[in-house]
Length: 638
Image (tube, rainbow, N blue to C red):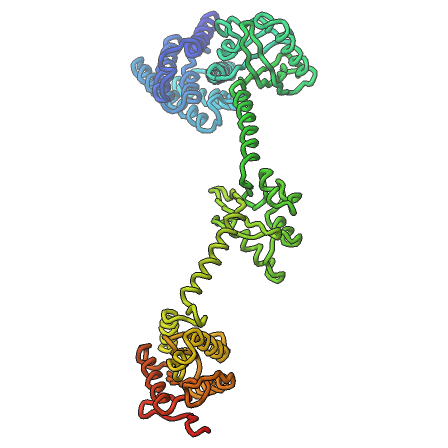
């Protein structure tokens, strides 16, 4: 019996020794990749299996056993396929080396243990098996471990009754369970240690102070950033000390008050703190203080995370000062400045902008939509010249310009002119600069009026007020282009004052000029339509351009002009008529006429005029391709 206990204890000791070696000896392989760890695990447990086979113990008469299957199955179950196979190969090779009648049965048992271990490894969900999984695996190993040995016992006619089977199964179960539990705990411990190492590395790498204090305010953990903040030599120098050891009484007491506040609140709080050091330097902190509890829920410490916000505070102060200066600058500029966001809501404007639009200044404040400002400005009469039925369309167009950008000029009801320059931003907002351009606009309008007057003077005959020759040529070119495009007819009247040289000789050039003015006024009265243009062609010769007038209408206008002039009874003793009369030649063009040369059309009218003068003057002649038709002549008048 003593040999039984010696063998049993020896086997158990080997199992414990292998587990202890794996748990406590930190070989370099433990930091390597998975395959290297599998080899190391398999070799260690393979050597353990050899050790167990060297110290078998007798469980019954002629029945010797060892716990090699525990070592092999546990290696596969915990270490995985590579470790299990390595252990199995080592154990099998040694069993073959030992030889004997039971070698075959022994190899079968080794293979069985490896197979059970691999199946268990495949079914478990974590590297560290649960207690339930370990118990089930141990039971399977205990039951399966009996088969090879007892087959051999039957073959050798060895008695293996319950008094042998039950203790053997119990030993295998206990040894396997002990190995699985111990290895699982060691795996969890290593995982915890790895996580703690990672957490500690993260904490130490933080650029911000992180520490833990007990209820009395003593440091029990701190990272290097805390030591830097406290101006301590290192983090270890803080352990067991309080803020009073590093800061002046006033600052440390203020920190302690914040800690007490967190204790009472029982939850995390954030405090803005000012840190005045003994060397006179000052920092600003944003500090999170969070109580932490033990497993029973009792608060045992305080986690403190401090962020140095000194640079932020200084930047905010500088930004505030810059904003104040910018606001002062914007308020003093002569232009109005306004900003709208992407939804066209006013977000900023200076006082100059509000002063420009005093009628709606109450609406031109942050938060007001641009559409509301425009509608109110129209309704209150600030913006003018917008028909009521077009207000909605005008506002939509104005809002579209805010999105597109550009420059717009518009008048206000008080007579001022505003120039609005819009610049959109990539984010969809827009800046608008408004300038009062009233003076420039008035100057521009005055200049435009002057240019218009000069243009009129440049195109007007100074004596008669009719178009001059240059303007007449331009009108003719324009009208001939229109006729060539098939856009209507054209008639031309060439007019000559009869015996005008005699009039000048008789009455003088002053009276001649007055006569020409009267004839010109009479001709201007004959040009009743907007498009009719009267011109002084040269000397006493006048012309009348009649767009969209056919031959009949042209003759009617010519006759009416002659009658109106006769009705004035301007004395002319140098004429056989006794009064001032005119001779008129008429030429016409139909729509789409091939004639596009003003010279030819004027020549036709001149030819008709010459005929009228040859036939006794005071008459109208119209040009025809075949002959000149006499329309009217007063040669037979008395």
